[in-house]
Every structure is written in C-alpha cells, then in structure tokens.
Amino acid sequence: MESIMFANNTLTESFDDIRAFLLDERRKVLSDAEWRFRMRGYGYNLRATEKGIEIARLPQNHVVGILEP
Image 1 (spheres, rainbow, N blue to C red):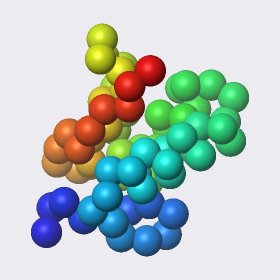
Image 2: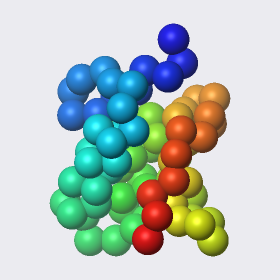
Image 3: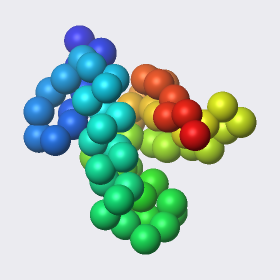
C-alpha cells in the first residue's frame, strides 16, 4: 500500500504523524540543507515551493503533502 509511510520508527498513514516527525527532525539540525539531507535518509524528498515545503516519498517521488510556512 503506497499510503503507508515511516515516522518515528512506525508505519503510518497519517500526514499529521509525518508532519510531526519532520518538524521534530528539523529542530535537531542547524540548516535546511542538513534537514533535507537527513530526511532523504528516511526516504523523504523535501522541496521548497511557493506554497511551502513539498514532501515526497522516495524512491517514487510521490508527493504526500505540503508543510505550510
């Protein structure tokens, strides 16, 4: 099932869980570049857009949501 994703060592279908995980990880690093690199290790691609940070699941690069500023 493609909608199941990883966050905090658990599988989830909840974007709220993914969002909380990403924001928690962001607090652990010093820069956006380091955060993006770290999230690629967890299987997420983060890309800045006009609407916010687009979150895509790798390797398919399937967009799962947007973190609004």
